[in-house]
Length: 142
Image (tube, rainbow, N blue to C red):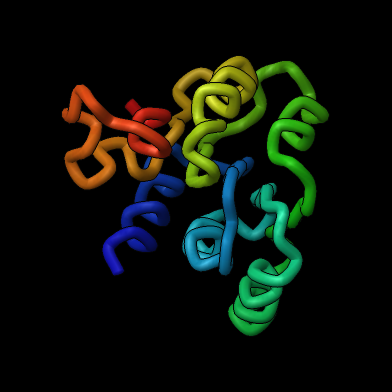
């Protein structure tokens, strides 16, 4: 329940007009960010699941923000690499497969405008990132 207001606040804080979300799942965070965008703002939502994002599509339509969200069903790296290379993204939210975080970060950073912001979910991973024996997703985040 804290995530949505925080993301909306961050979108407004940086005056975002162009947002990218890597990992949309059921669309809850995309909804919060889209509601915080100005009417002509856009959010590119990257995910690989038609099934899970269908919940988001329905909620976006009911909330009246579906026109602000461009859902792209494809591997996020493909979507990011197809974007213009020049800085144009105001805010990015990264919450996809943990093993891909570094690759997503490397694609996003050059596309961020000066003063833009990248928010990364799970960076502490329940404290597991302090474990020197970390494996799996925890090791990837670490």
